[in-house]
Length: 139
Image (cartoon, rainbow, N blue to C red; front, side, top):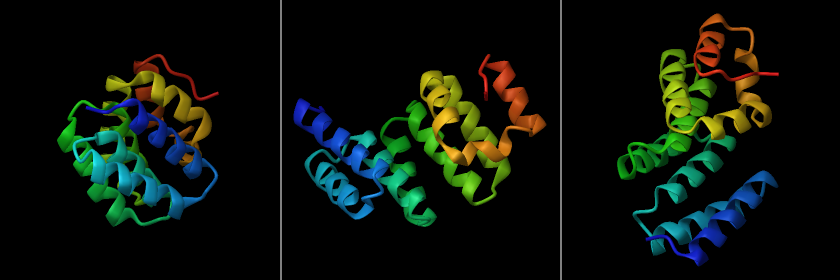
């Protein structure tokens, strides 16, 4: 079970990621994983850091582990979609993007505004159909 300390470390690691302090963030995620190896949020957070570092192979390993630990973890599906967008695996992108919305619509609403990875899709018909299906906006 994740305790308050682990939540605080997750928050700090996320902040370091936003600040592009990737090595420091990875160290915190590694510490969390060592302390709480069944924590899908730690694996997903580290996957996101690796994605931002363009280390897509390592990012995929971590997102697979996050989804193994929690197959209904919508934010991990969003990370999976973002990795596939970077790799130009469009079918996988759309599949995982829709899973992310279905499981955690609020997270995707935030990401659509904050993550540049989605912007190239804003005029794509397939993307817009998914957005419409779930009553989201890309403005």
